Length: 548
Image 1 (tube, one colour):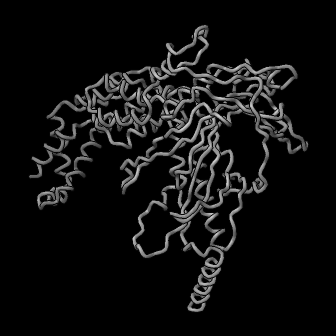
Image 2 (spheres, rainbow, N blue to C red):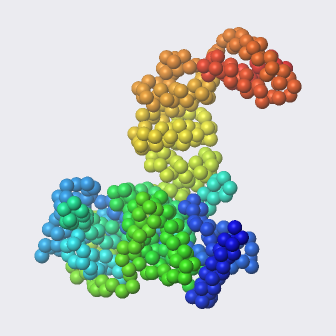
Image 3 (cartoon, rainbow, N blue to C red):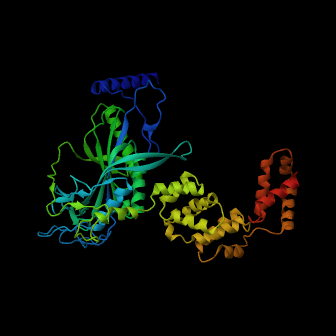
C-alpha cells in the first residue's frame, strides 16, 4: 500500500514537472471529472493561496430554422418528412438562369428575433456568397451575410436554479454577436448496405437564422440554460418552432479551457448537437477532455468534433489547422436589404405592404419568457421553480391561469395540481397540454369540491384519475358514482372513532403519555374504515377528545 502511494506521488510530481516545462506560466492542478448538473468553475476557492484551476470557456453558434411556409429565396414549401426531393424548385436545384427572390416573412422573423434579443437592427444589410463544395449544396456556394448581418450586439438573459435546494434564481447574460440570414443545405442520406449516398434537396434553401453567441459561458449547464431560454423565446415569437429532434434548432459549441485572467486556449468545435441535454453533456465532457490532454502534457487540437450520445464522448471529425478559403464575395443577384424604422421613413414610391417596418414588428412582440416568469411569481406568489415549470411547457401557463379564473382556491394550492398531477400524467403518456383530457374548468370544479369540504384530498386524487380515464364524466358524477363524498353523519363517524380507540389501547396510552404523533396512526385507521371519506380535521378533533 505504501509503495503504491509513493509511486502515485512520484507520478504526480513528474506530471507537474513536465507541465511546468510545457506551460511555465500556468499553475496546473488536478481537478475531478465535471458533472453536468453543476458548474464547478463557479464554486468558490476556499484557499486563496492555492493555484487556480483551468476552467471551461464556451461560445455557441445556433442555426434556427425560420418558421415560414416557403423557403428563403424560392416559393418551395417547407415541410418536415416530405417525400425526398418533392419540395425542390428550379432555384433550389441551382438550374442555370434561376434567380433568388427574398422571402419577406423570413426577414421579419429575423428582425423580430433581433428586437427580442436587444440587438441593434442594421437598417442596411448585405448578402454574400460563401463558396464550399458539398454534394448537398447544388450551387457550390451558400447565400449568407458576412459583411453586414441583419442584427448585431444583442444580449440574452437566462436563468439557472441554484442554492442548496435549487430554488434560488441566478441570472446570467450572454452576448449575441450577430444574427444573420442564410440558406440551409440539402441532406445527405448514407446507405451503408449498398455503399452509396443519396441526396435529398427538400431542405436546400430553407431559411435559417444563425445566432452567434460570444464565449461568455463556462460549462454545459450554462450553455444548456441559454439554449433552452432562446428556444422558449423563439417559440413565443413564432419565428422558429425550435424542435431540435427535427433539426429546427441545431447547436455548434466552441469549447476551450484556460486559467482565468490569461488568454483563451485553443478551441475545439462540437458540431450539430440536437438536444439540450446532450449539449450539456457534450460540453462538460469536452472541457474535461481538454484538461486531461493538458495534464498529460499534450496540446489541444483546433478541430471539429461530434458528440456520440451512446458513449457520452466527443469524437474527432476533421482538423481545422489549414485555414479554409471560402472565397466570400458579394451576392450579385440580391440588392442591399433595407429595413425601415416606421412608415413615415418609407421613401416615395415604396410599397408599404412589401417593406419591413421595425415599429410594426416591435408593437407585435409578445410577452417574453423571463417577463412571464417574473409576472407569475409576483402576481400569484408561487415559487420561482414553479414558474420555470409552467413556462417551459407549452400551454401550461394558460392552463394554470384558466383554472385560477374558475376557482377561488389559492394559486399555491392550484400549482401543485397543475405541475404534479396534471403534468405528471401528461409526461407519463407523452402528451402535450393541449391534449389533456381534463379541461381547466373540469379541474377547477374538482378543486372547488375539495375546498368546500365535499371530498378529502386523497379522494380528490382518485376522482382525478377517473376523470383522466373518463373525461366525459364530471367530478360530481364520479364522486356520486364511486361514493367518494365525505361522511356527513357525525354520529356514524363518532362510532368509528370510538371503535378504533377501543381496539388500540397501547396507542391511546402512548398519546396520553405525550407521544402525539401516534394520533396520526389512529387517523389513518379511521380513514381506512371510511375509505378516505372522513374529514381529517373533524376526525382529529374527535380522536383528540377520546384520547385526552
